[in-house]
Amino acid sequence: MGAVVIQATGIHVRFGTFHVLRGIDLTVCKGEVVALLGANGSGKSTLIRALLGIVPMSGGTVSLPDAHQIGYVPQRVSAAGGLPATAQEVVAAGLLGKGRLRLPRGWRQQVHDALEQVGLADRCHAATNHLSGGQQQRVLIARALVRNPELLVLDEPVAGVDHQSQEQFAITMHTLVSQGRTVLVVLHELGSLAPLITRAVVLRHGQKVHDGEPPQAHPGHDTPGHVHLHTPQIDEFKPHLSGLIGLDHASEALTYHPKTEGGRSDV
Amino acid sequence: MYSELSYMFTDPLMQRALLAALMVGVTAPIIGTYLVQRRLSLLGDGIGHIALTGVALGWVIGSAMGLRPVDALTVPGAVVVAVIGSVLIEVVRRRGRTSGDLALALMFYGGVAGGLLIIQSAGGGSANLMQYLFGSISTVSPTDLWLTLALSSVILAVGLGLRTALFAVSHDEEFSIASGMPVWLLNMAVAIVSALTVTVAMRVVGLLLVSALMIVPVAVAQLLTHSFRRTMWLACGIGVVVCIAGLSITYWHNVSPGAMIVVLAIGVYLLAALIRPILHRRQAADVYTRDPHPDIPDDLCLPPMPVEPASAAETKECAT
Image (tube, chains in turn orange, cyan):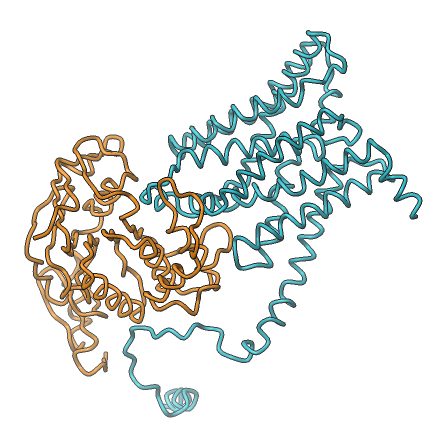
């Protein structure tokens, strides 16, 4: 295992009276692809935002590479701001950093190359608000890649993203990982990235509950396009859905796989 | 007509006013672009309110020192108070969201009320403040012009020299923090430069209408462009045209230059809103016949579409 890239010990974050992160230790070594898993509100995003200095920590220490070696992809469906901006302009912002407030020579080529890596080179001059949610997310990934980062930090990069963009994203990630880059990625489910993940860290209620092998997802959570339903009134739903093909019954959840019968579903 | 125009351009008072208007027309939309980008369109308005206290303080100090003319210190006073105010606004904005909103409102109204009280308690009337509230071309002295020139160069140096950095911070502050950019410093720079813009534009359009000159040209430009850079340049061009045209009209008609310029700018906005559909139709003439939806596969598996027409099935069902 390579050199230590991220070394965080005893991270605490408080928002007013809310104790959001309660003493988290995290070590990420060079070349690792670490998935940060957990339910909504378990503190995944807050942890990486605290690591990057976006959210102030109330305790703990963090050691990270220099900011110019970090590529951050925030959790956001929309890359559009208050005014129109082209994909080129948004990605070019990624070339700036500490002590570099103006664009370097040859920035156009660098921006073009980064957009090519996410399969959007032809949309260089398109306004970001004319792109789909998945394409906007890829623009944000290109903005991180244009920095040529040693460490990539991604916050739910495939949440709410169309299938084509998800596949493109998986291809991009394969390339980056094969180049030996370190990745810390917040995910809701492993999905198409599962083969790349070397380690998983699971958060629950602001505490680390697992650090090691990627855990098995709940049955049904690993197929794209699945629909699942958690409700206390689950028994009321069961009779109405009993004719549905591809339905898994569990005591606390119903999972429906529309693809199990060759894509056909007859209700 | 020609003689009238040449008379206007040879009038030193008018020359100074036109030069000031030119600088205001260039600088206000540049800074306005950043404010609109961060959804702080009304910040200029707030700074304008606060600057009124600075004007009053400058007037009081000037008259106490027996300076001639008595309003020699109003612009420096406005600069100092507006900069302090804008720094305070930025600090409040950083602290929090909900309480910050109220704190800003208190500062804005306090600025107007304070200015009025200060100038009245020093024996001046509200008439002394009118020219600052609505602009007046007769008040641009040679000293003012030099000050305007100096402040405009600072605004341009920051606004254009740091364009990509200010765009990055205005577009996505958290990404900029993660990138190691001096976000706090850049935010302060925008706040201070906004304050300078307000005081530069004060003489020409007046404090109550300063914000309109920062925002309306940007509002027009974003209707017509797709990129941040072009929005900024187009807004700049519109700002210069409406400032020069509006000011020239007040040379023949005795109306407030600020009001004239802002009405012209809003007229341009209406015009742009009207021609935009035509412009887009022409640009996208070939696209128009095509499907307007992006060609992106959804992740849905649908049953094949029913072959028989839906209406036939419906009538059959009704008959039974």
